[in-house]
Length: 68
Image (cartoon, rainbow, N blue to C red; front, side):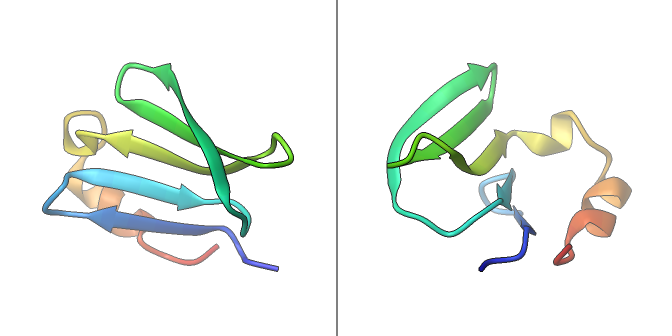
């Protein structure tokens, strides 16, 4: 079982939160610049936040770059 993992891609300015392992069946836009990847069983696999530096400070992003 995959532990929740938070990754920041500086080049894309995107934060990705991996929730569980699984194959992505579809991606759903749930808010402006927020996407949820959904697996075959209908459960959320991951969450992606685009243009994250506009929403979260650089210091907060650095603190999030850990495996939870």
